[in-house]
Length: 221
Length: 244
Length: 47
Image (tube, rainbow over the protein chains, first blue to last red):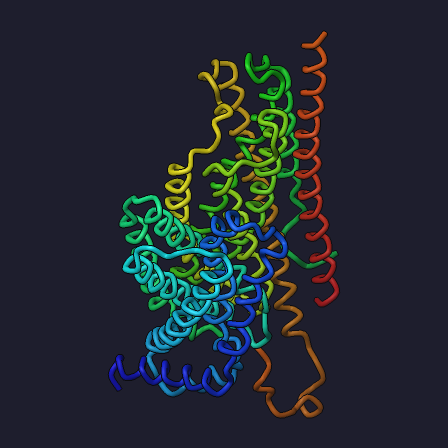
């Protein structure tokens, strides 16, 4: 089976799993949405403040809650299931890319829906849609690559509930800053190119790191 | 008495005590800064702590990479020891920075690049230590930690870069840079003494912490291979669900 | 007078800083020592 085919198989499997369990759609997404709802309750509902913090809150929720999407599959797997997949002889790198791809697609949906919620609740108006799309894609990609890798590193049979988010959070800072600063630059009519480039580099490095670690991680008990 | 080969080594503790004493004396006898007054003395513990925070981090990363290459547990212990000591000094650096900032700037925290970076690094350390608690399998733990260590090495420069860049765009309120006018020689010398002493303390602590790591690994191995009931009573179907 | 008051307050902060530092370092060193002893005892038991 070609690498591409292996990736597609895994991605399809993960997406099917999601269709069956509906966890992202019915649990993680509402969780993110209610978080966005709670913030004004805590901070204050005056419009100027909300418009100011809206984009930032959006990205924080995406980063912190989105990681749950990236790790849900690895968390759901038991050691036995993982061993079984390993026995099939599928390239561990393909498994990694496949999982990341599935998470990436789900994260895009996550961002989209929460983006709409943010626009509504915080009265923000996205401007440059091109940059917005680029940032959405890069953030989702980076987060899924990072989350899948971190989940692979932790990979215990027991659910170490907050451990993967703990590992991901500090390392996701370049993505967080990249996304927020790129969009802020647009608002201030400055160039967001450098931030977008930074995010691209992060994504590329994470992809390399993830692919290279795939086999060593699979070989670890 | 145990049958372990090592005798109780006390010299690291002695070295630590001496280094601590020297630092204290140096820091207390140097003349205070013209601008900051006595508060400048806090620098002599804050700066070395910050330096060690980064040094320890580097050693952890190096140990991780070396473990992935050589696969010997010694490197893993070096990485772990440095990580734990690193957490202590990072926490110290942040705390001392806050103690210095409050009377100097009037607030406990500012969002300047260095402070923010150090805080982020603190959490990377914590994550590393938390990860190690998830398994008792020595080599599995070592490999996972090492991969995290190397991942951190890859990401930290990017974190560093993005934070500095971000702060560059949002000038922090300039209430006054910490160093002010260039420090006079006696202060520089005292600072160098303090940094050197703290580094010596770090090395001494590493010796003891690595010794501890070796002992704890031995305990784990002993517990895992301890003689249970003789086969017959113990034969049962393998538990596929058990992790590690 | 004012200078003396400022100086006194500053010494309080310095004291806090050094207190935290040295107590912290001693406490950590002690924790290593205690853990070493505990591990040694455990090894003594199982061997």
